[in-house]
Length: 502
Image 1 (cartoon, rainbow, N blue to C red):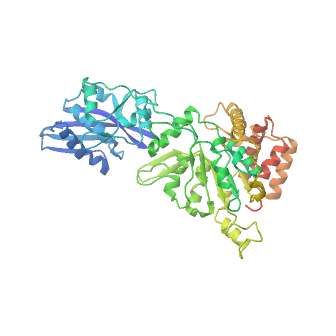
Image 2 (tube, rainbow, N blue to C red):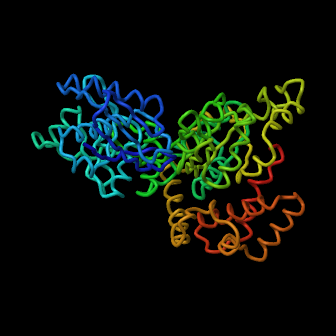
Image 3 (cartoon, rainbow, N blue to C red):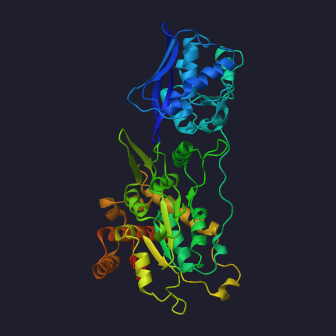
């Protein structure tokens, strides 16, 4: 008897359909799995055999062969347990073959027949919906997968419950979508005393998704400012929410079946490795830059990160995606993030204070900041010094605009950009625009053009720097409600580009 069902193999965000074929035929008793299975998939036969025994189902004294097609695609992960078990049960005619053949299934199996939640339920449900199939999965994966309305999702606590469902003895209800992950609670810009210029830079960065680099002494408030940036960003759109949640589903970081509504905020430690930041490892999983997709990546103490890590950021910043190359596959993950970096001006941190600086000043600052290459620094749209806060300012009452007020202005600017780029799939904010389209939407008036040309010549801005000034100026104009980029917008954008100490 030959039976078939479908499961998935993950390649980046793509869940590729894999046909599971099971044949029970005369021959020496045995249980073999073919089709490039890894160790976890090969061990499925022992888990399945024991689980079936616990359910009182004995395998016949025949040869059981399971083929995972396409055979040249590597199969990794314990989520192959459930589809192999269902296909075997259909081949043994214990469950009907038609509903099994018309379903995608994922799930790990314990020795007593229980189903264990696995990562990747959301991409698997998307594939099931595209195929017009239903999805069978562990009960813990059901609320997550149910967010995909195109697929009927059935979550089961055990293999026995799924057998009862397929045989009609105890049909399972369709899974209901889980709760939306809550937005982080209230960090307000008013908590930061002083630093008005830095707050303005945060607003511009949030409005146009411009990368921001802050330099200042310890305790100046750089980390406080960065932590409040997510509160300035608009909620994820439905398309962004699904895309971002799929990445977190593959990483296994979604909680209780919810999807993300607030933009992610990732802050890796400076000891993180290249695979941890850009992705990779044995299963080529997503890294911090992909987990920060559509959100914020905050890298504190940027010069302390290994040079190899810093240099790998250059291409993803430009392209918005990272390609993890392996001998047998190239895995792509999206990574359109807002990079916020912070650093002390030198190792002791007191370079700007002549009375407290170390004996190696100012050379220590040059050596320390020299760890950041020129090409990487050129990719920061906004650069600013964050001075130390005066003690007298700390006792003053909270002032300035709240995060809610700034977020309202950011949302208005984002709406203007969404209307401007409505016909493009690749451009969402001003940071994405390039080429002739940039010169069309960000062309300055005569005075602004003259100022930009003079600044480019005097300070020897690169072509990238020239274009990024235009992008920032376009965002500043959006925040002020101006249809045209004018001289004041260019002047402010240049002010964030030409910081001598950085």
